[in-house]
Length: 360
Length: 129
Image (cartoon, rainbow over all chains, first blue to last red; front, top):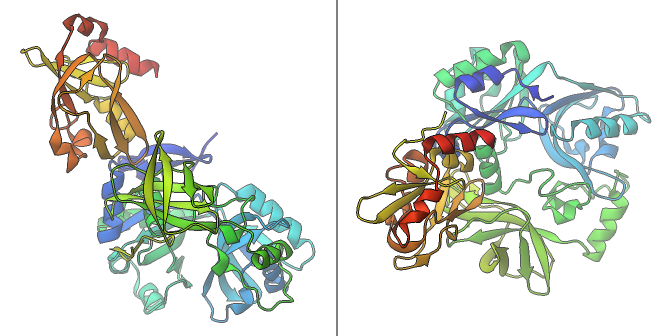
């Protein structure tokens, strides 16, 4: 049994090719993945991300609970609406999931977690919550639309009310605000400007249609993957999972080591890994000649080998890029096993495109 | 429903073959195949002058989704390749039976064509997939 989002009919109307994505019937593309990718880099595109799981955390201990639950520190959040990206670790220091936390008050937060990990995430949160005065509430009555691209905000502005436009006016990146019936956040998964909009299921199709009429182009999961990969953003299940340390997944920046006495789950293990420099690292690979780097391929580096965790053709750059988990000793070049041949690739920082431009 | 022109011959591995009337045969991949593969990003073609056997992998169609071997539907000498695909691989998606052709082969044994499917046979073959 696959689930459908409330926008399912709108996808079919737009000519989507639907696929099973971890139990959700989702649009992979609406004809051409590359054209959808380019629409987001050059203009404005929208994604149905209603399959993602919204979880509200409320209660006297909400802050204390989250300071235990995740590796980043929600106590850093002081301004209402500010968001934080972080990993939720297990006791072995592996990544149970990556998520965004929006801060409203010290007793009220909103979490957005992955759909494929929904059940285990909720089970883990509820298990940890037994020691805290906190209520964890999933919000399946909400859909979510990500509007992304250099013209995304301007096009969205044409369909928002005056009050909503006033609410988002001048909002910095990585903030969210409740504006009348919409929750509008300046977050995304593409490396472009834009919004992620949480909307009630009953109003989602109408919002989608308004955005479509405003010239925002529907984009599928295919484009979502090439966009996030160009932007060097991790995909849970590919670039990290429960067997991978955040230190081996380019997530060190999402760990708050200070204050040292904050005992978040997984801390002991990753603290030791950090001291020992014992983990692999996540790097970017670039193949400027023909061919496409693919996830799962072996990467041969000086003194060892690693693996491509995600690889694709980059429509923005015109050649293939990949994320790879490799030994720390890895230098500026590596070789990838592609179709039984070894191919030379460049090793770079794991980020390729930002705001429509190459950062290589 | 995919477009399957009735004047072409087909391999079960989703290549089409068109007789040019001079003993040479143009080869491409079907509309169904390009739909399965998604947007094409690179096409690796054989060299003109190469000798290929029927069923030999002689080209690679690389899409956003996967790299896929292309098999020679009949044996012979490669007499032409579609060099336009170097700059516009998307022709394979947009016009699989026209501008998206891959290579032309001079048949060494025209009886090999009898091993290929007609449009009806190919359609039945897709339906089984």
